[in-house]
Structures are given as C-alpha cells and as structure tokens.
Length: 210
Length: 210
DNA sequence: TAGATTGTTAATCGATTAACAATC
DNA sequence: TAGATTGTTAATCGATTAACAATC
Image (cartoon, rainbow over all chains, first blue to last red; front, side):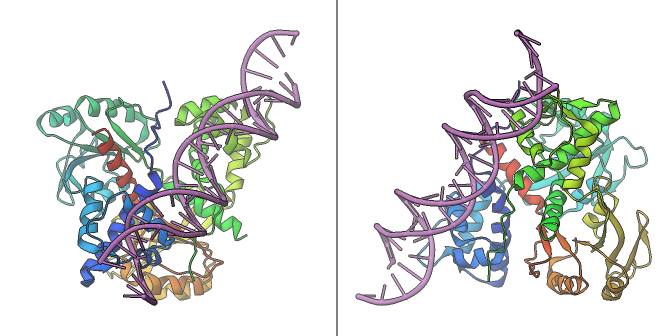
C-alpha cells in the first residue's frame, strides 16, 4: 500500500526555483538585463555551480557567454513550474494560518477563489476579498467550478473526510498544512508542509553553536 | 566571504523529528506505551529503516526488542532539539503571516513574549495575548530581557537594519520568513523559511502527473 | 587573442536503503 | 526455541561539487 513518496528527481533544485525567480524579478525591476550565475549565487548564498546546474533544468533561453538573460530566464522558470497559467485554488479552514495564506502575496501562479469553513460567524464574510463559504457546499461548488489546488489549514481531525470530497470533486493537488496523514489516489499530487520542521532545524543549529 | 551554509550533518533527519514527536504524542494520548519503527513509519509514510536510523540520533532510552518506549522517546527527541527548555522569542512585523505565527499552537519549545511593529494602530494592542511594541523600543527591550529567537515576518526592505539591532541585542537565532538576504555573525543561528518552495514542489508534482 | 562565462562530464560526499547480526 | 525487533554495517542512489571543455 505504501511507498507513496514517488521520487521526483530534483526536489532540492525545484525548491530553489522560487528563490531564483525572486532574485531575477528584483534584477528586472532594477533594469538589469543580464546576470551571471555568480551574481545570483552571491545573492542567495549558494555556490555558483548550484545555480548553473539548477537553471539548466529550465533551459534558460538565449544565453551568451555573459550570463543569463533576466527576462527569458524568469519566463523559463515560470513555465517550468507551470506558473505561467494561473491555477485556481480553494482553502479549507479559515483560522489564523488560513487567513494568513489567503492574504499572502508571494504565491505566484495561485489564485484563491474561495475558502470554506464550518463556523457560521465566518461563513458569508470575505477575507482579503475571498468569500468564505459553508463547508457543506464544498461538493456542489466543485461540480460547478474547476479547481486545481486545495490548501488544507483546518484542524486535522476530519481531514480525510474532506480530502475524499476533494478528490471526488476532481481536484488535482492538495497542499496539506495539517498534521493529518491523508490518502489520495495516485493521480492527485500531495504536498505536506510542516512549519515546525524549520524550527527543528533552527533549534539544532542553536545547539551546535552550543 | 561566503559558504555560509555550514553543513550540519543530518538535516533531513532533524526535519523529520517534529513528525515523530507528533506521532508519539498522539500514541501517548491514546495510552499506547510501546511502538515499533513499523508503526511510526506507516503513520508518516516513510520506510521503517528511516525511522530506526533517525531515532538512533536521539538515543531513545530503554527499548526492548518490542519497540520504542513512547514516553522516553518523546523526552529524548525533545531534549535532542533543545525543546525541553522553553526559548523566549520575539516576532518582528505583525502582518498576516506574523499574526498567524503568534497564534500558531504547534511550535513546542518556543514562547513569544513580544511582537514589534511600526504601525501605530497596532502598537499597544495585544495579539493572542502577546503585546505589540514599538519597533523603536527594540534595542531597549533586548537590554532588559534575554531573548533567544527572533522571527522575521516584516517586509524585506529594512531587514538587515533590524537584524543588526537583534545581533547587537545578543539574540541567539533568527528565523527568517522574509526574502531578504541577511548577514549575521557566525555565532548567530540563521534559518530561512520559504513558503513558496513548497508550492514549487507541488507544482512540479502536478506537472509530472501531466 | 585573452577573458569570462555557460555547459558537461567526472569525482566526491551524504542520505537512503538493504542485509544481517544481536538480543530478549 | 522461534519470532520480532532494534542496532549496525555495507551497498546503492542521488545531490553537490570540482574540473575542464566549448564558445563568443
């Protein structure tokens, strides 16, 4: 039943893509048109060879031996990640974290079209202009609208029940911020996000500095 | 100047520790006293050998050849991460993400004692019972109180200026949720958190499912 | 041409996985 | 004893880094 974790190849490289994208956009705003792997590397604290190897994955267009063309490389990364076409998303569970994510400006390619909750005080309101709907309308909603990504920020308990509704509603991907272990059919992409993993890493670094 | 990224050894294992901790606490609540690597592995979708190898790092006490003792293993992980002693933390920038983190219940070992902002509308209020103070009082505050961890959730622009104040104030660690590249002296632990890295990973998985 | 860069191939390092020894 | 488990050592795999070839 297990071995869910299909190896995707270049996970660390893919995770760095958003850093590159950010830096490149900053160059673009400054009017810089060409940039070297050295420049980027210095900016995000990795070795230049890492940048070169990673960017090769997206086949950045028209490089001369002077560096990467900023605009084209932005487009190449964006296309590589599928961020050139906006994906519509819903969010389940409008708590602190949920509201924060709804208002977060840093998710390119993602457009929240609705949020769902059980709390009657929240249902009917909007948060950052996104309507909060009754969770009991989820299935109907998914029949009417094509939604690609569902973001889970509700309490873990009933996660699997919701996930089943989502997969029946033909969602493509689930981004799971809860601690529930959830099962999805193989054609549904699943990403688990664990905020305290970062804290664990930081804590270990503190200990190492004694 | 660079090569900031001091290799810590077991980063992936350390990041998984919070998952183990979570599962073990769930067993504890159910009254389960002994648990095998197989149980844990099935629960978090990794191979049993991964659990065994990872847990060896924390030297879980008193195992019989029947599994790990839940209570003792919880204590061992907690101690390994330094989460047995509460660390006091402040948060800089009480925006959406900042407020969400202040209210997040899932950071063991971390106690927020104050938040800082520049917005006069926020200064003087409390968020989740944590007082929001004027950023101009940051240095004074750090002289009076021993603070271990600073969480950065403000706009990137002035990050380095704030970081300099923090390091002068003898902070031990910085958890950076902004996109600013920041420099810290070598004795200060630094952890960069990038929410959109997870989205990049998810997006790549969607593409792979075509 | 010399210099600076990306692109590519090879070497190294670390993390994951497998196999099995030790133990109660 | 047989069985089930952790602990340990070895093998494999993948990611990082180094070295250098190709190019304008």
